[in-house]
Length: 169
Image: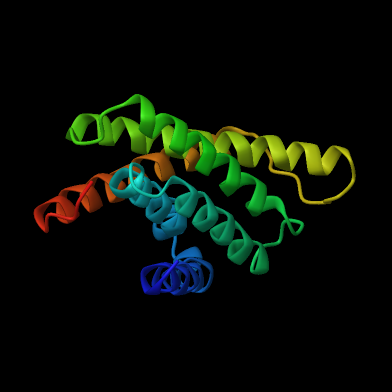
């Protein structure tokens, strides 16, 4: 795990700071999940070469998000680790060289992220680890749809841009 790995950890940390302190304060931009977009994009371009490397990065991303989160420590570690396993499995099932499959991959990455977030939030609340409960109402689901569209767009654009620079699959 060399300089690229350290660079990606620093990038995750910087993106987390941007997401927590800047994007979350802006109405439309608060739905952007930079860490989710980065992890999904890394899986698109590196799943054949370094699956364990990507799972470790998912774990580190969850750890860094946990440091800045209102949720109990371990919440994002679990969410991103399970998301990493899912993305690893999914990247083995579909050919990620085609744009529409990358869009599909981005949609599923977002849906699975929210699924695990809701499940762990409910579990942590039920076993009294957390007092924070996501209110599953129309407003929350409209936020999920907005986030799904924005994050999938970012993942898809990242794919197109990186493919132009011939970043290897």
